[in-house]
View 1 (cartoon, helix red, strand yellow):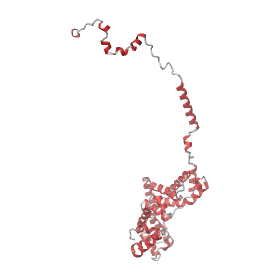
View 2 (tube, one colour):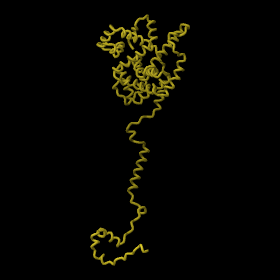
View 3 (spheres, chains in turn cyan, brown):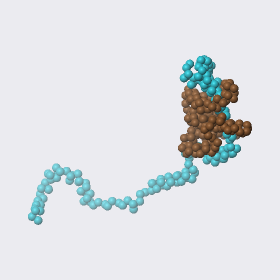
View 4 (tube, chains in turn purple, yellow):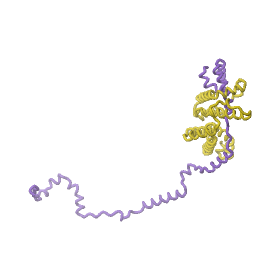
Length: 159
Length: 201
């Protein structure tokens, strides 16, 4: 083992969590490497020094404060509770739906929809023959049209 | 925790009693302010209580607890406002702090001197730990002060065990250099004998 591999092995060796194989590898390396042996000894000493780091006492009101915060928590509602809204809201929504259905089922108000003016008999016939009147071939060969007197052409330039 | 999940309120009290002090101390060493540490610990327990119904015992309870605590502490540290506040708190909590090594304290009566040396050494250690990068700091605290298993710490810090071992090595290496005067004075006090009693982290 070289010094680089000690990076992943040394801490576990020192805190006695290394496997038997790892422990033998580390011990073999420490036996021949003064630098790593010195580092290992200093790490042990360091852990002793770190024990001097100050700890804090927990405030005596810690639990009471936490209990008060828990008591102030709003009750958590289940998914079903979220799907079923409050009774008043449910009643209002149902009422609105029923009202909408009732209004849509009413007959249409004649005052809002004025009736179409009845067409005369002549207009009805004209509409009936409309495809015929629009047919150019029929109109061009319609003899009755050729008997009509021709309109005199007026020259606008003279006016 | 399973009893808490089942609605046993007394079990929550037992959890509180067991983990209150370690949790507050972990958070204190992370954020270096006692009041903030207590606030964060309250938040951790509140979150545990809120999510008790969803608790699944697929990991140790301590892993879950310290994971919540670590995330909250890291968020608090990353909060810019907290960083600004931290400077003023440091000035108030360490009024006697200066850059002198711990061994150079002025002479005084034996009892007082011992107290001053101990206080100064503690402040030096606290500063050295706090100077570590946040993830290294959390790793050292969970390893050294809470003696969690490597797999637990790795899950809390969301990294592999191999990465965690490297992280711990680099952190302890930094502390070894930063706290060299204290480590050396410990060796002197122990007559240059290796610290055999410190095999446990």
